[in-house]
Length: 239
Image (cartoon, rainbow, N blue to C red; front, side):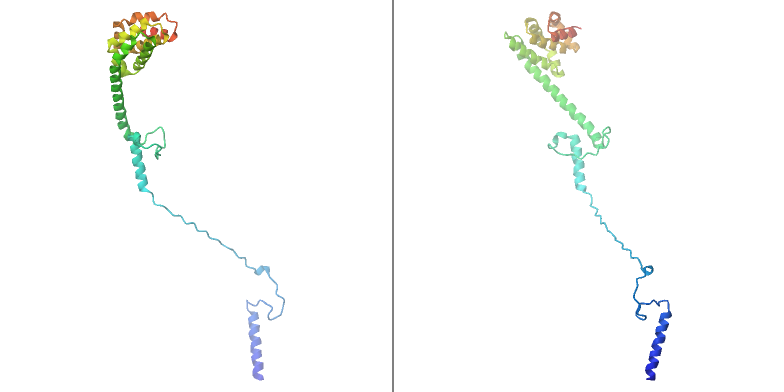
């Protein structure tokens, strides 16, 4: 019995010591008091959310870039070799400045254009030379419609330098033009022949051909024409 009382006293002492510590907050177990929420002891909770963004870097397509560069060079040097609708990636940021590719291609392009012009020049001269005998014959035809059409064709030939030079060197052809002008009363024929002599007069050799073939009297006769284009060509050629 004494042992039991000693154990109880020892337990009471331990409880008393526990209550006297800094943790002696009455939970209601010992005192039986009603539990009350104390706002001062409430610890706020903070929730943090972390977001992670993953960026994947792709390797540049060097093969595509190389093909694009090659295509740009080919487009600059030989634009006619590209298929229709082919899109070329341009690196030109300032339209007023040429890119390195364009600078590289410029001499080649100029040479190609010169060759094309030379071929066209030779073709025009050859065409005019072959056509002149037949055209001279048609200018002397009795049918005024045929004469008018032939004069219009010759007029077109004199608008190109190569064929014009070939024509002015053929005095037989210039003579046929002057005779057609003198013998025709058709306005369209007079307009075409006056235009021919006007085009020939742009060069000294053409003026000499007009003078030698009797073109001056024919042009003076055209000064009385009521047709304004004929009058214009006659005045400017004589001047």
